Length: 217
Image (cartoon, rainbow, N blue to C red; front, side, top):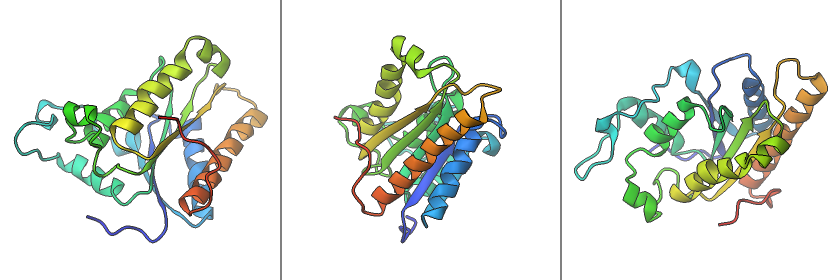
């Protein structure tokens, strides 16, 4: 097991295919803010890495000994010393990209059976860690809320993972109106929210009172 870092470490997982998209501006803003606070950041850019999201039959938990694929084992080793897992992704057709879902299936859920999930045994390398998500959407939050999308996304992807993996807390920042031609004023407003969230997260991980409240169990 890797040695625990002397300062909080943020494991940031970005799932956006375009290196010039707004998701990468969110990524860069979060990373710069965390580094300015003197904390460590490890970035996993899934598309740039060429991460394979396909869960194969041999990777399903079985009654006998289970061993992860080499790429999965390497990702798990990076997560173990992290204090927080940060997800950055766009909302496509009401859900995160398949690439991120594949990372959840192959890495975050590595070796965890449905019975362990049901019994809330927790994923050993995720237990007690925080989960922070930034999602981007072209559609306005008010419209998504009318469709029940905001509640569904939180319940299906945030709360379910938080509880099922035994994580300490979950927070989700949703950025809407992310479209070509978005004004610089609107873009800066979103990135300001990212910076403020990163600063609050760093303060909490450093031992200061949290500035935001986790989802209620």
